[in-house]
Image 1 (cartoon, rainbow, N blue to C red):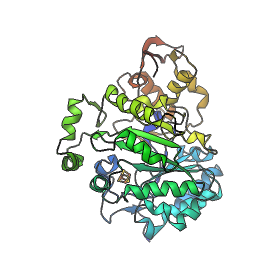
Image 2: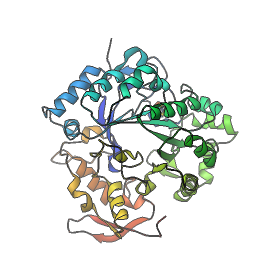
Image 3: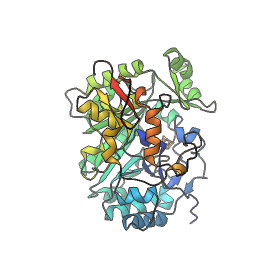
Length: 408
Ligand code: SF4
């Protein structure tokens, strides 16, 4: 077999707000072909046979060396510190090519032997087959996140052409639950006028016994080659770009995002629908993340045993801590005790987000501090719901932020 994918382990540039920035992908490219997929739109994911596969043995060796502390570098530091790895950040680990290569199976088979904390993201029903169920069973530090955008099979087929019928995915959730495998649901992306009525959706998922749901609105790519517009039109007869414009969408990086007020309406509807259920809520729209039920961003994996080392030195967690402690100010030094990596991260950043060259390579802390103090950065605390710059600086020269309105 030829293994041509050489970067299966990485740190995502989302680390300033994500509790799971350590990424593993056994395949480059994704044949599920979701029309809204950012990785696909940016040229990373393709629906052809050109999908690249990583060598599972090399991945296993990196983990073995990391654990023995035999390698330097940020990835090894993450492994040594048993930071949970997000498996499937750029492609689905259980897409159809997995049936031929089995790379995801082999890597997980090894990670299970050391009970390494893994969070899988998938929308493949391969996970419900006997072979994979056996693999997942008794893997203590494993959480499987299943993503669904709509329960309507016709719309799903248009938007996610090679994903199974959503009903099958709901059945997988039930099956995993019955086998005591940790599973959560991601309602991502929530697409205006296409995704289901919120009350209806909640009623359906309750039947699966799910305990946690992540929720995020569609981010619309600014690239013209996005075909979400065409597919959205074929479902609704309308232009999604026009709808976003009318709603006052703003540009954030390379995406249009809905304004906070618009998102808040849906979040509040979902909260109401979940009231009285035992389903917790993870808010994946960054501005609201600190208001999730649990602290590890939208994933909520901190409720599961084995995930204590999720990545905490990040901006969302600093805001979350102040929020939970009822503090009026939000300070960078509130997360200073969480720093446990010193390797350079420059090579994982794209040219636009990379910090200008300094004498020494930049660590994750350098990036967080830069984003913290740059009010124009899309990662800056002032971009979060109800947070603003307090016009004050701490003794280290870092900006201090504060909450502004009534908390929701
Ligand atoms: S399954 Fe995930 S990675 Fe694959 S195309 Fe869909 S959204 Fe992208």
